[in-house]
Image 1 (cartoon, rainbow, N blue to C red):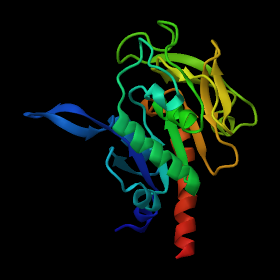
Image 2 (image 1 turned 30 degrees about the vertical axis):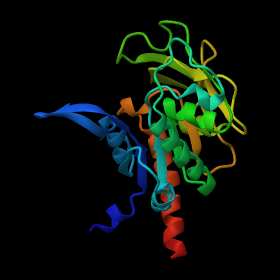
Image 3 (image 1 turned 120 degrees about the horizontal axis):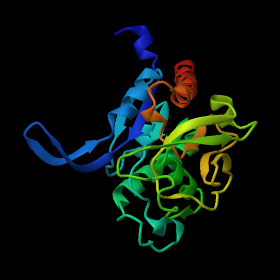
Image 4 (image 1 turned 45 degrees about the vertical axis):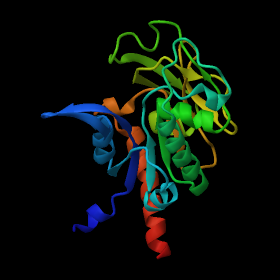
Length: 242
Protein backbone atom coordinates (compact mmCIF):
# COMPACT_ATOMS: atom_id res chain seq x y z
CA UNK A 1 0.00 0.00 0.00
CA UNK A 2 1.21 3.48 -0.84
CA UNK A 3 2.41 5.28 2.30
CA UNK A 4 0.74 8.59 1.34
CA UNK A 5 -2.59 6.80 0.94
CA UNK A 6 -2.27 5.29 4.43
CA UNK A 7 -1.87 8.78 5.86
CA UNK A 8 -5.13 10.05 4.43
CA UNK A 9 -7.46 10.68 7.39
CA UNK A 10 -10.36 8.28 7.79
CA UNK A 11 -13.56 10.35 7.74
CA UNK A 12 -16.94 8.85 8.54
CA UNK A 13 -20.08 10.09 6.75
CA UNK A 14 -23.47 9.39 8.32
CA UNK A 15 -25.93 7.89 5.88
CA UNK A 16 -29.52 6.92 5.18
CA UNK A 17 -31.38 3.65 5.39
CA UNK A 18 -34.07 3.88 2.74
CA UNK A 19 -35.74 2.18 -0.20
CA UNK A 20 -33.49 2.32 -3.27
CA UNK A 21 -33.36 0.93 -6.80
CA UNK A 22 -30.37 -0.24 -8.84
CA UNK A 23 -30.10 -2.63 -11.79
CA UNK A 24 -32.94 -5.15 -11.29
CA UNK A 25 -33.10 -4.58 -7.53
CA UNK A 26 -35.46 -2.50 -5.44
CA UNK A 27 -34.93 -2.93 -1.73
CA UNK A 28 -33.89 -1.23 1.49
CA UNK A 29 -30.33 0.07 1.36
CA UNK A 30 -27.75 2.09 3.23
CA UNK A 31 -26.75 5.05 1.10
CA UNK A 32 -25.62 8.65 0.91
CA UNK A 33 -25.39 11.04 -2.07
CA UNK A 34 -22.14 10.48 -3.95
CA UNK A 35 -21.36 14.18 -3.65
CA UNK A 36 -20.42 13.68 0.01
CA UNK A 37 -18.07 10.83 -0.82
CA UNK A 38 -16.46 12.78 -3.66
CA UNK A 39 -16.03 15.92 -1.54
CA UNK A 40 -14.30 14.05 1.29
CA UNK A 41 -12.05 12.12 -1.12
CA UNK A 42 -11.12 15.17 -3.20
CA UNK A 43 -10.35 17.12 -0.02
CA UNK A 44 -7.78 14.51 1.01
CA UNK A 45 -9.76 12.14 3.21
CA UNK A 46 -10.78 8.51 2.93
CA UNK A 47 -14.60 8.38 3.20
CA UNK A 48 -16.38 5.66 5.18
CA UNK A 49 -20.18 5.36 5.30
CA UNK A 50 -21.83 5.08 8.73
CA UNK A 51 -25.42 3.82 8.38
CA UNK A 52 -27.64 3.62 11.48
CA UNK A 53 -26.94 0.45 13.45
CA UNK A 54 -27.23 -0.88 16.99
CA UNK A 55 -24.16 -0.11 19.07
CA UNK A 56 -20.52 0.13 18.05
CA UNK A 57 -20.26 3.92 18.30
CA UNK A 58 -17.19 3.99 20.55
CA UNK A 59 -15.33 1.41 18.49
CA UNK A 60 -15.99 3.33 15.28
CA UNK A 61 -15.04 6.71 16.67
CA UNK A 62 -11.79 5.31 18.04
CA UNK A 63 -10.91 4.31 14.47
CA UNK A 64 -12.03 7.54 12.75
CA UNK A 65 -10.09 10.77 12.32
CA UNK A 66 -13.07 12.96 11.43
CA UNK A 67 -16.86 12.93 11.06
CA UNK A 68 -19.36 14.39 8.59
CA UNK A 69 -22.97 14.58 9.78
CA UNK A 70 -24.81 14.54 6.47
CA UNK A 71 -28.10 16.15 5.50
CA UNK A 72 -31.38 14.28 5.61
CA UNK A 73 -34.89 14.20 7.09
CA UNK A 74 -36.28 16.36 9.89
CA UNK A 75 -35.09 15.62 13.42
CA UNK A 76 -37.80 14.34 15.77
CA UNK A 77 -39.10 17.49 17.57
CA UNK A 78 -39.42 15.47 20.78
CA UNK A 79 -35.64 15.80 21.03
CA UNK A 80 -36.08 19.52 21.73
CA UNK A 81 -39.31 19.12 23.74
CA UNK A 82 -41.64 20.27 20.96
CA UNK A 83 -44.68 18.82 19.23
CA UNK A 84 -44.41 18.16 15.51
CA UNK A 85 -45.76 20.98 13.37
CA UNK A 86 -47.90 20.39 10.27
CA UNK A 87 -44.92 20.69 7.91
CA UNK A 88 -42.53 18.47 9.88
CA UNK A 89 -41.70 15.11 8.34
CA UNK A 90 -42.15 11.76 10.08
CA UNK A 91 -39.47 10.89 12.64
CA UNK A 92 -36.50 8.69 11.79
CA UNK A 93 -35.67 7.76 15.36
CA UNK A 94 -33.06 5.11 14.59
CA UNK A 95 -31.03 7.62 12.59
CA UNK A 96 -31.57 10.35 15.21
CA UNK A 97 -30.33 8.03 17.97
CA UNK A 98 -27.35 6.79 15.97
CA UNK A 99 -26.16 10.21 14.85
CA UNK A 100 -26.72 11.78 18.26
CA UNK A 101 -24.50 9.11 19.83
CA UNK A 102 -21.84 9.63 17.14
CA UNK A 103 -21.96 13.38 17.63
CA UNK A 104 -21.68 13.29 21.42
CA UNK A 105 -18.91 10.71 21.23
CA UNK A 106 -17.02 12.84 18.71
CA UNK A 107 -17.32 15.91 20.94
CA UNK A 108 -16.12 13.89 23.94
CA UNK A 109 -13.03 12.86 21.95
CA UNK A 110 -12.59 16.30 20.34
CA UNK A 111 -12.82 14.51 16.98
CA UNK A 112 -13.07 17.01 14.11
CA UNK A 113 -16.62 17.18 12.75
CA UNK A 114 -18.61 19.00 10.08
CA UNK A 115 -22.41 19.13 10.22
CA UNK A 116 -24.26 19.70 6.93
CA UNK A 117 -27.88 20.96 6.94
CA UNK A 118 -29.59 18.37 9.18
CA UNK A 119 -26.13 17.73 10.65
CA UNK A 120 -25.87 21.34 11.81
CA UNK A 121 -29.37 21.18 13.26
CA UNK A 122 -28.49 17.96 15.09
CA UNK A 123 -25.42 19.62 16.60
CA UNK A 124 -27.64 22.42 17.89
CA UNK A 125 -30.30 20.08 19.28
CA UNK A 126 -27.75 17.74 20.91
CA UNK A 127 -26.41 20.70 22.88
CA UNK A 128 -29.84 21.80 24.08
CA UNK A 129 -30.91 24.11 21.27
CA UNK A 130 -34.22 24.24 19.40
CA UNK A 131 -35.35 24.46 15.79
CA UNK A 132 -37.80 26.50 13.76
CA UNK A 133 -39.91 23.76 12.20
CA UNK A 134 -40.87 25.62 9.04
CA UNK A 135 -39.48 28.68 7.29
CA UNK A 136 -41.59 30.95 5.05
CA UNK A 137 -42.60 29.25 1.82
CA UNK A 138 -40.31 29.64 -1.18
CA UNK A 139 -37.45 31.07 0.87
CA UNK A 140 -34.81 28.37 1.45
CA UNK A 141 -36.56 25.48 -0.31
CA UNK A 142 -38.48 26.30 -3.48
CA UNK A 143 -38.92 23.12 -5.52
CA UNK A 144 -38.27 19.46 -4.65
CA UNK A 145 -34.62 18.50 -5.14
CA UNK A 146 -33.74 22.02 -6.29
CA UNK A 147 -31.04 23.98 -4.49
CA UNK A 148 -31.41 27.70 -3.82
CA UNK A 149 -28.32 29.86 -4.33
CA UNK A 150 -27.88 32.80 -2.00
CA UNK A 151 -25.27 34.80 -0.15
CA UNK A 152 -24.37 34.30 3.49
CA UNK A 153 -22.47 36.82 5.56
CA UNK A 154 -19.83 35.32 7.84
CA UNK A 155 -18.87 36.75 11.22
CA UNK A 156 -15.36 38.16 11.42
CA UNK A 157 -13.00 36.32 13.75
CA UNK A 158 -14.82 32.98 13.56
CA UNK A 159 -13.42 29.65 12.41
CA UNK A 160 -16.00 29.81 9.60
CA UNK A 161 -14.56 33.13 8.42
CA UNK A 162 -11.03 31.74 8.57
CA UNK A 163 -12.15 29.06 6.10
CA UNK A 164 -14.55 31.00 3.87
CA UNK A 165 -13.80 34.68 4.31
CA UNK A 166 -16.41 37.39 5.02
CA UNK A 167 -19.12 36.03 2.69
CA UNK A 168 -19.97 33.05 0.53
CA UNK A 169 -22.41 32.16 -2.25
CA UNK A 170 -23.95 28.85 -1.19
CA UNK A 171 -26.51 26.20 -2.20
CA UNK A 172 -29.27 25.51 0.32
CA UNK A 173 -32.23 23.18 0.54
CA UNK A 174 -34.03 23.20 3.88
CA UNK A 175 -37.33 24.20 5.42
CA UNK A 176 -36.19 24.18 9.06
CA UNK A 177 -33.55 26.25 10.81
CA UNK A 178 -31.85 26.91 14.14
CA UNK A 179 -33.95 28.80 16.69
CA UNK A 180 -32.39 28.91 20.19
CA UNK A 181 -28.69 28.11 20.14
CA UNK A 182 -27.40 25.10 22.05
CA UNK A 183 -25.04 25.49 25.00
CA UNK A 184 -21.65 26.85 23.97
CA UNK A 185 -22.51 27.23 20.28
CA UNK A 186 -21.92 30.48 18.42
CA UNK A 187 -23.76 31.50 15.24
CA UNK A 188 -21.10 32.46 12.68
CA UNK A 189 -23.05 33.17 9.48
CA UNK A 190 -26.49 34.46 8.55
CA UNK A 191 -28.49 34.94 5.36
CA UNK A 192 -30.23 38.21 4.53
CA UNK A 193 -33.46 37.12 6.25
CA UNK A 194 -31.62 36.45 9.52
CA UNK A 195 -31.54 32.64 9.25
CA UNK A 196 -28.57 31.08 11.04
CA UNK A 197 -26.41 29.63 8.27
CA UNK A 198 -23.40 28.42 10.25
CA UNK A 199 -22.43 27.75 13.83
CA UNK A 200 -19.42 26.43 15.66
CA UNK A 201 -18.27 25.26 19.06
CA UNK A 202 -15.29 27.38 20.15
CA UNK A 203 -12.40 25.72 21.90
CA UNK A 204 -12.65 22.51 19.87
CA UNK A 205 -10.20 21.28 17.27
CA UNK A 206 -12.90 21.59 14.59
CA UNK A 207 -16.63 21.52 15.37
CA UNK A 208 -18.55 23.43 12.74
CA UNK A 209 -21.97 23.20 11.12
CA UNK A 210 -23.40 24.84 8.01
CA UNK A 211 -27.04 25.01 6.95
CA UNK A 212 -26.21 24.84 3.26
CA UNK A 213 -24.84 21.96 1.16
CA UNK A 214 -21.13 22.51 0.43
CA UNK A 215 -20.80 18.98 -0.96
CA UNK A 216 -22.77 20.03 -4.06
CA UNK A 217 -20.10 22.51 -5.18
CA UNK A 218 -17.12 20.62 -6.62
CA UNK A 219 -15.22 23.87 -7.20
CA UNK A 220 -15.27 24.89 -3.54
CA UNK A 221 -13.92 22.24 -1.19
CA UNK A 222 -12.70 24.64 1.51
CA UNK A 223 -14.89 23.30 4.32
CA UNK A 224 -14.02 19.69 3.55
CA UNK A 225 -10.34 20.59 3.20
CA UNK A 226 -10.44 22.31 6.59
CA UNK A 227 -12.04 19.21 8.10
CA UNK A 228 -9.45 16.97 6.42
CA UNK A 229 -6.59 19.13 7.73
CA UNK A 230 -7.96 18.95 11.27
CA UNK A 231 -8.52 15.20 10.89
CA UNK A 232 -4.97 14.74 9.64
CA UNK A 233 -3.76 16.17 12.93
CA UNK A 234 -5.78 13.43 14.66
CA UNK A 235 -4.03 10.84 12.51
CA UNK A 236 -0.59 12.29 13.30
CA UNK A 237 -1.34 12.37 17.03
CA UNK A 238 -2.32 8.70 17.01
CA UNK A 239 0.78 7.71 15.07
CA UNK A 240 2.98 9.65 17.51
CA UNK A 241 1.28 8.02 20.50
CA UNK A 242 2.02 4.53 19.21
